[in-house]
Amino acid sequence: MTYYVEMGVEFTNTYGDITDNFYYSVESVYASITDMLGKVKDGKLIDEFQPRLKAIVDDTDEIGWGFHD
Image (cartoon, rainbow, N blue to C red; front, side):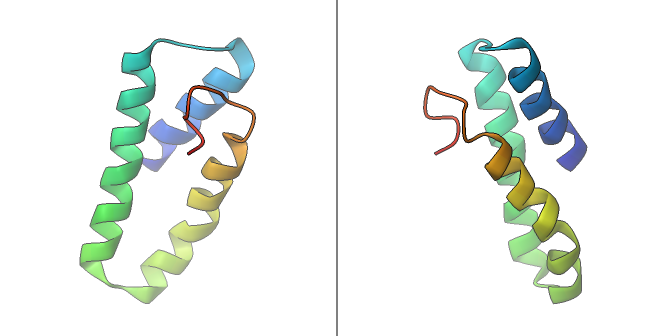
């Protein structure tokens, strides 16, 4: 799931704006990741994923339409 979101962000940064449904899908999967990590409450697992999840957010900085938010 994390790889899917990473590739979605990379695709947008490479090719420009995509459709609303594309952004909704990527955002939904990102939310699923964070929800699952919150339910597991495993600090080691969270520490493992945290750098990738932060990098995803950082990489959306220049993307418009509220995607970064």
